[in-house]
Amino acid sequence: MQRIADNYWQLPPADLKLAQDEVHVWCADLDQDPTLVEQFHETLTSDEQERAAKFYFPKDRQHFIMARGLLRLILGRYLDQAPAHLRFVYNAYGKPSLEASPSLHFNLSHSKGLALLGVSSDRELGIDLEYIRTDFPVDQVAKSVFSVSEQNILRSLPDALKPEAFFNAWTRKEAYIKGLGQGLSIPLDQFDVAFVPSEPATLREVRGTWENAHNWTLQHLTPVPNYVAAIAVAGSGWQLKAWRWLNG
Ligand SMILES: CC(C)(COP(=O)(O)OP(=O)(O)OC[C@H]1O[C@@H](n2cnc3c(N)ncnc32)[C@H](O)[C@@H]1OP(=O)(O)O)[C@@H](O)C(=O)NCCC(=O)NCCS
Image (cartoon, rainbow, N blue to C red; front, side, top):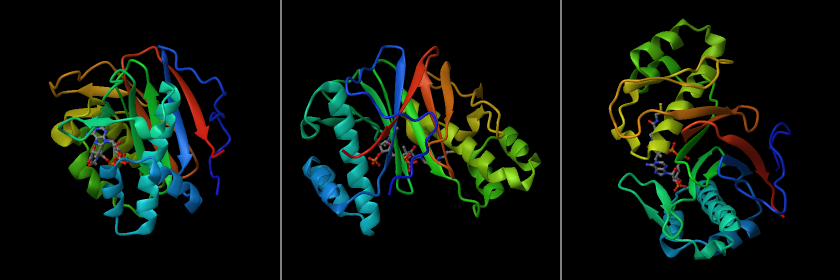
């Protein structure tokens, strides 16, 4: 069941601390034992349980419950509070924050049974995780979500590099808009990211004039083989710590 790669992802220490200049990223496998899923379900509020009940496929319901339950468990660990006691509020675009602890910033992403959670004590952040689908019509989809310059770079790459390059760009763009928290009101063709495989994740150019547009730092993440992820954090000079969540 455990699929998390043994690279820079570490097991967290018992006396976990989140320093001012640190950003923590947690990686968790959402395919867990039904007993644990049931325990996590108990920690959700009634509106979250109603949301869970609306999923058509049991697997999707289980992944939602695990991701939301883990969010509660891990944030509760930083705040020394019981997971069920946390209350989320949502901005106009659906980005959650903590009602009683708005300065503990976090963002969650899940894809194909894996979840990533970013946490910071004083910086806005966004995170995105995707499974690299090799059967995806990348050039076609890029036309609707990438800038013209990004589309040209993608088209110029050898076919073998295109899926990874596409999902690098997707996760970096999505992490940035999730950090800003204004959803797709941020036009995706109004900013460019670097995304060629092995090229560092950077925000290359922002042409739009939305609030807090500039001064975000991107970081590429490889949680497990065949997945790609990125985190976007407001400002620079922060340190990343990557934890893997294991049950028990
Ligand atoms: C909803 C949205 C945040 C993306 O969600 P997604 O990629 O489907 O899902 P993820 O797993 O990465 O993130 C979902 C989580 O982000 C958080 N979230 C919800 N709305 C958010 C917002 N406006 N900003 C930041 N985070 C948000 C929630 O914790 C949510 O978890 P939940 O669904 O379990 O409640 C939004 O950005 C969107 O619809 N994007 C469209 C995708 C797209 O076209 N991207 C183009 C990239 S090039």
